[in-house]
Image 1 (cartoon, one colour):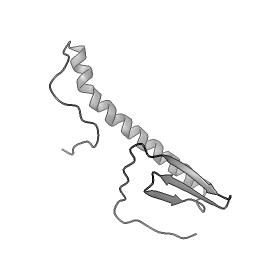
Image 2 (cartoon, rainbow, N blue to C red):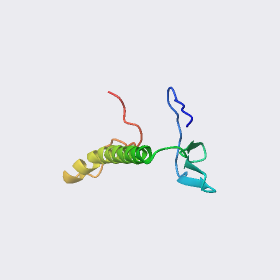
Image 3 (spheres, one colour):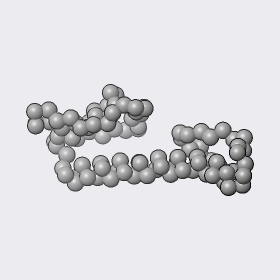
Image 4 (tube, rainbow, N blue to C red):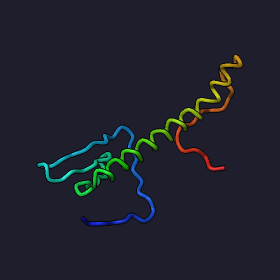
Length: 97
C-alpha cells in the first residue's frame, strides 16, 4: 500500500456537488468528493473505511450544531413576540472569539 500524508489542509467547496463512491471493474475503489477531489480507497481496511464513516458523521453533527446555533436568536425573539431583532443571520463558519 502506498502511504502519503497531506501537510496543511485541502479545501474543497462542495455546494451541491455529489459525494459518491466509484468502483472500477471491481479492482479499484474511490471516494469522489465533488469534481475537485477523489481518494483512492482500494487498499483501505474495513476498519479504516468505518473510521472514515465515523468522521463524516462527526462532521454532520458539527454542521447541525452550527445551523442550530444560527437559529437560536430567531427562536428567542419569536418566544418574546418579536418578529426580527435586527441581526442578520449568517450561516457558514463560526467566528473565532
